[in-house]
Image 1 (cartoon, rainbow, N blue to C red):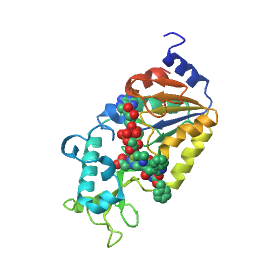
Image 2 (image 1 turned 30 degrees about the vertical axis):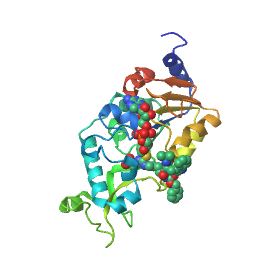
Image 3 (image 1 turned 180 degrees about the vertical axis):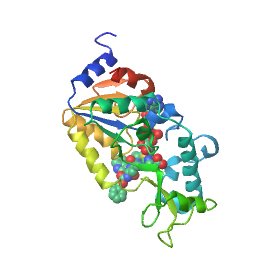
Image 4 (image 1 turned 120 degrees about the vertical axis):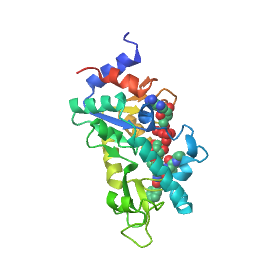
Length: 249
Ligand code: BV8
């Protein structure tokens, strides 16, 4: 590994960093077999635009179709496992307990890999809520109404069961977003993994970090919006390069 090698430089920058914040997107789960929004939807969902489905309008227009899409994704996620990229980030947090992990993903794989205090900007498909009150709906109720697509809500006569995720056009949870802004403003290194950097306000976090002087490392096999201002670019899949970046203890 030569000194000019971006991986060598990234390892040195990470070692020297006092406070590390990580931001991940759908790309870190790609090697777990979960298609990103950007890849064509596979199988029966190939004909639908995910941004249409992941929206209040899409749910209002056809709640059954959106519910079934999330059920399909939940099953896909349930059959998947964290990959070496998720596990490397969990190991990094074990060595640096003040590391903040922010994710745009809704699959819960960071938590299954052992990461703690994960900031889920866009919620989680592992939780189901009432479409009117946003109160949690438990698994027993959903099992009793498994034949309804979607099940009705137990909390409101007009409510339906919906995933506890942030759809396009919906506000992000204020407390989570506030903590994410804080983590971007107070780190001296931000590791960005597997995001196109196109979805806001998440996409603004690396810029906030950059503007206050943090070193930005971007991990993505393809070009993305972060690359324009990243200090270091590791153009490799996260599952391959993160274990090398974090290295053995
Ligand atoms: C809001 C949950 C306001 C649902 C998702 C400012 C400018 C422009 C637009 C806006 C703006 N502010 C707001 C908007 C509108 C909109 C937006 O950003 N639109 C974009 C498309 C232009 N934002 C919103 O609507 C947000 N809400 O701002 O509300 C508001 C305020 C008050 C009151 C009311 C409203 C809400 C956005 C959240 C949407 N929900 N997810 C679900 O998942 O079902 S976002 C969803 O799409 C994913 O979470 C993901 O983050 C995002 C993008 O999908 P992908 O492209 O798949 O993923 P990603 O971008 O992460 O790209 C994958 C990358 O991985 C690629 O680059 C690829 O090369 C790379 N990769 C592939 N394999 C690997 C890899 N990398 C590493 N290793 C690999 N192996």
